[in-house]
Image: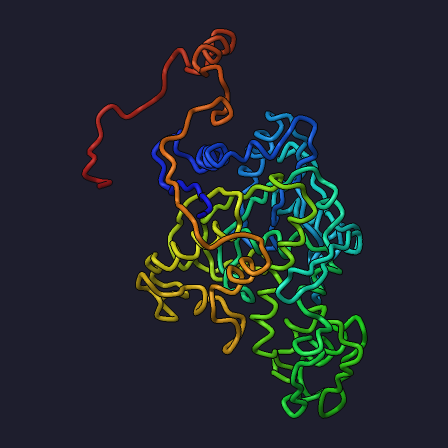
Length: 438
């Protein structure tokens, strides 16, 4: 049976049609209120954006969802997890992430609920999940704050991704619910075939200490696996745990990717998502996706490019595979945006795979937009068969408006005490020649 995916487009001509109103409307239409019982601890799984990223979901969506959950009797908290490493990573520890989240607008005062970094100070506060149904992962480590919650609403931003080609609901929980230990696992860090330690080495491409950035390369590895000599690079594979710290530093190509790593890791993302869902009782996880600001790369990077396709709208479902399938297929049928990576890669026409061409990290990397989806079907996460239900008009509710009391009576009372309009009026030129400024 096809899974139902509820959808509203992004057009608006008034408060009833705002994306905030539409988000809450598809939430109700999909029956996601049934995930929450009074007293439930409810995780709002969110990516709060990398330092200097600008395409992440705005806090207003999260605040509205948190208020909705509180209205249902739930106790919401916003949660994400620490990242793998990078030379200047801004979310690799809980303290770093909280600083970045606050800079991006995510605090208890803005959201109306706590912000929790779910896997602890450095990312090893987690729960092991056995995963015999996994396509490639046979176990996974899920952040404790997520595994211990009663329910979860995954609020996802649909866009491109340099490894998985796209990032949506599956990626939000697949990567974002995994602890740092779990991220090592899903990125296949010591996998005997695809692990980072198995990458090909081309030492002749390294200029050694003749390169202006050699010191950066030498200090990037926390395991001390990289040493730069006068003429080349020495890399001790046995020390490599696949932390990603060298990825953004070694630009000479001395250590390259294994092309198959992309598809294998993308499948691992779907397996990890399955593990996250397994920590909840059936029917206690719902998904809401905003397909807006659809940039080539994800919210994990320190910049945001021009969107490659126009905004699509907001989706809700109990099935993350079905919802991601609907998003991917709608994106494929969209026209590209002039001057974007879609034009650069000649995928402007409807019917072309935008993310496979615009989002892959490297030539020869992941080229399929179906790997996450197919792996999610394989491991039982969901179905690619879906029925798209276009929801009608929103129902105006008090939380769509700033205040339930009209402003004018209240403001009239204020003006009697402290008038705004001056009694003598304003000074004007009575008659002007408007042709002088036209």
